[in-house]
Length: 64
Figure 1 (spheres, rainbow, N blue to C red):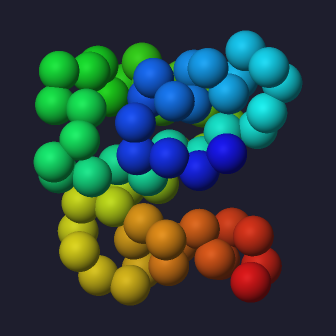
Figure 2 (cartoon, one colour):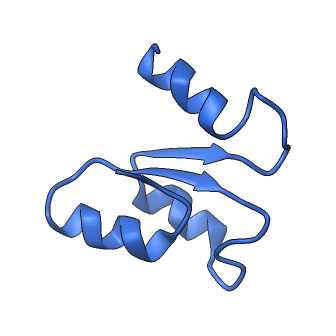
């Protein structure tokens, strides 16, 4: 599951899904980002705002 909300990915992980977190400047402001990095299968920093980050990087990870 791909999401920008840690709580969604925590729930997905509990039912056995692989998780990809895309960090956004406007989401999860009260979360411990280092903890999220440890909890998810892939962590993508989508805060730079260019095509090499976020979903562009996800395409690279998936080979799409």
